[in-house]
Length: 173
Image 1 (spheres, rainbow, N blue to C red):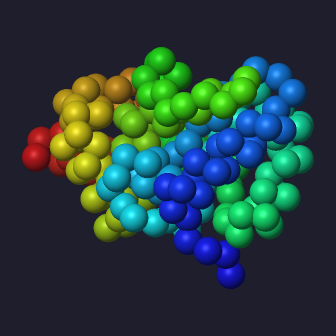
Image 2 (cartoon, rainbow, N blue to C red; image 1 turned 90 degrees about the vertical axis):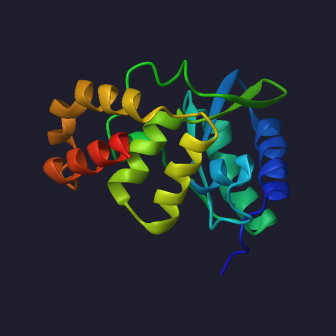
């Protein structure tokens, strides 16, 4: 069993993974780790990351870092579960830069859509925090969802009418 992740462990992970980099890149942080860094939670169970590009040096460093830091790291982003919303890279807020690696939150609009799809209590609380902090405008989320709605067939775990209903209800609250 690994320790729960704290903001301090995320910072240490970012510094350590950046040391392994052999090329310029970005690491996108998502899920509970984003919530933790934004102050919406005190801990989370893992650090979800997307590497751009897929740097073999970073990928090889992750198992060692997991062991040394006693944390879970998952190669996962919201775009693995819902379509990435158009312009997601430009809307991914900067966190910090260590060496040649920039760290960003994965686009909060796509994170919000993913959290609405899962609809667990913590996810819905995170989605509400995104609106409260001005990171997501519900009406704009609905507009962007409509742009990618025809692509939902690529995600067989999603029930499109249920997700549409959740996004519409979220946008109209």
